[in-house]
Image (cartoon, rainbow, N blue to C red; front, side, top):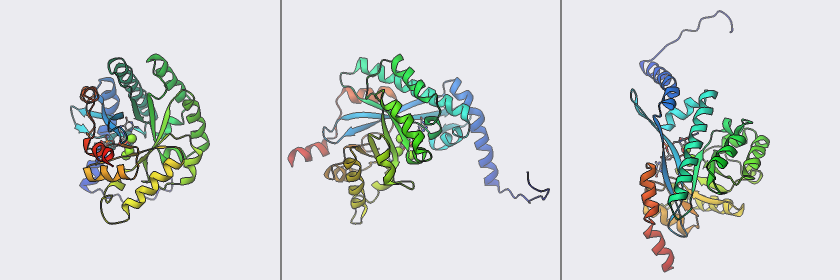
Length: 289
Ligand code: C2E
Ligand code: MG
Ligand code: MG
Ligand code: MG
């Protein structure tokens, strides 16, 4: 503590509300995990070559009886401040997704992957690769069944350590995706150093994709860089047929967004895959040209 000087503290009502909501979320979360209030929803990712579901992203959902729906955008940053809670949530997300992957593998003819979001701190924990390896064995998952999404920030905070952990996991057949690409202070240099199989373009780039501005050229450049480095490029936040069409024309590999389907409970995604759901407008256009 610094000197005895007392800074005056002014609270606006708003600040007070925020502090107490944060506290309440933090306090409720640990119990929420125990009481199984959390659930994973799955958002399909479609391949632009086949028009079909290639895989899905697992996204945490929490309905708290006291607070109502709390979005991951709000509770994940709170979880990340508490190492024990963060470890617990990560273990739960990974186990739930792996169990789901093995169920789908038995029930659905078409194999597809599930990607999970993992925070930087978790990747850097020495026990993390063992945790993943244990789950792969427990659920007898084949290489390629699990993708781990990491943000640029979580990898570049310690590139050497990230590469080591990623190489260990890569040897077990795990693929890595850089999430929200372009949203932070991207460095193209680290893309070469990290064993990344996928690049997910941040949804902010979808906004002026169809317009007359430079938006389309920026996305074209990202797709080219990703593919030149051997990565599968995924566009996130695709909301309109026009955006999907432009992405298809630019040679983007996969699309994810509300246009295809928002994140849905496991059963809804399963039905979609079983029906062989596809994106007709893109596919028809491609076969015609
Ligand atoms: P993210 O990994 O980038 O996930 C994509 C987010 O975009 C999801 O928000 C998804 O619902 C939303 N989204 C998908 N399509 C569209 C679209 O067409 N338009 C718009 N406007 N949004 C779309 P969600 O589920 O609220 O998750 C927010 C973030 O929270 C995720 O961003 C991810 O960083 C984090 N998160 C979610 N679940 C987990 C988890 O299990 N573990 C960790 N560590 N983070 C998670
Ligand atoms: Mg993600
Ligand atoms: Mg993302
Ligand atoms: Mg995000």
